[in-house]
Amino acid sequence: MGMGILTIPYYIFHPSEARSIVQWKTWHNPPHEREPQKESVSLRICFDFLDKTSRSFSAVIQELHPELLIPVTLFYLILRGLDTVEDDMTIPIEKKDSVLRDFYKITEKEGWSFNGNGPDEKDRELLVQFHYVTEEYRKIKPVYREIINDIAHQMGDGMADYCHKAADGKAGVETVEEYDQYCFYVAGLVGHGLTRLFVESGLANPALNERKHLQASMGLFLQKTNVIRDIKEDWDDKRRFWPQEIWSKHVENFEDLFNPANKEAALNCSSEMVLNALNHADECLFYLAGLKEQSVFNFAAIPQSMAIATLALVFRNPDVFNRNIKITKGSACQIMLESTQNLQKVCEVFRRFVRQIHRKNTPKDPNFLKISIACGKVEQFIESIFPSQTPNALQQNAAAAPEQAVEDPEVVREREEAKWDTIYMLVAVMGTLLVLSTIMIGLAWLAGARFDIAAKELKRSMADSDMDWSEIAFLTDVVIGSFWAGMVDVRGEFARKELYIKTNVPYVYSCI
Image (cartoon, rainbow, N blue to C red; front, side, top):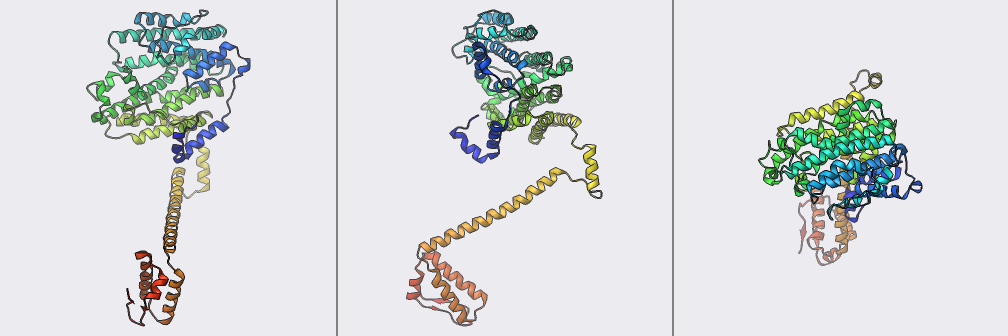
């Protein structure tokens, strides 16, 4: 997460984000650390591929408990291999079908690799050297292999079915039910597999195994967020994952979403997609409550917090139809700092971004009320597990101020901020006036103005006359005006001209 030259100006104007990056780099202590010196050559190569294929998950995977470190790494690489085959449009459908459906068997074969991907496929090298993955895979516990094989089998069949549909000319998703099914095959199954690994290792509550809908929501929330964010990128690749059942309510053809003339309709469509994803948010928090070990909690919590932040970013944001937008590195570091502490901190992250979505919601949106209810549902769930008003806090407030109403801390904070904002504004104004006055006087002095002669003449004139203050002010204006009118040499002017100031006469006469 280094800063390039182009990003330095951004962080100058966003110092809090720069501070978050420094804090993450300086103060984050991984719960567990790898020991590369004790790893085999093939395992180190597997971790190299993990770094190359996943910028988001690599760091949190490598901080996992030693019991889960290698199984989860291999699980990720196997599923990444499946995804690489499914995404490659250069592979003939017959060959792709057989590889996807038999991939769970291939993982057990010694020395297996695949070089059938096109030269431009970004993760092609992983499959070319897949024998390193299969070599390490055969070393892990049989119970872990059974779990990974089961998920790879189901996912491969689901991907093959979708590829056949695309080959038949039905490249898009039609119904919301079909959309949920697709997201389940590519992400929900991952939630099932990881939960089984967590529970089998003894690092999660066994009750999670019985709550399939919570496991699925963990994957669906991430996948649906990615689908919303990546709409432009997917459309450029001739892929369409937004269900027709949703977008057809707002535009006639899918490509109309990218037409600036349909901006409002496109934003309403994206709002409905966000609403669909937001319905999984509270279940994700419920799931996180069942994770007992810190590294496992971090591994699951960080992606979910990133997802809710991304939803807040893309909500009613027209840029999503022009480019792939992401949260900044500084924001990501701040989220990771908060999400690696405990569930209450993660809930605070969710509450913050849900409120951002609520503030951006508009009555013009056809789903305004539903989005407001969805945001309220998340806040209600958070309040149910971490009440903002505990009995002890209420008793303390009542004892401290029995005759006064308990004042909202947020109101107090905002009032304090307003007070200091006013002070800072006054200091800024006075400082600006001081700087400008200094510059003006300095320019007059450089141009030859003699302030000492002007002061003497003014003092003598006041002593020789009994002018009232209005006449003194008028005289001062004449003297200062002479400096700025022509930057004249005051000393020369007084030598060349006479300045008559007559007692009790309300005018000043000067020979020009």
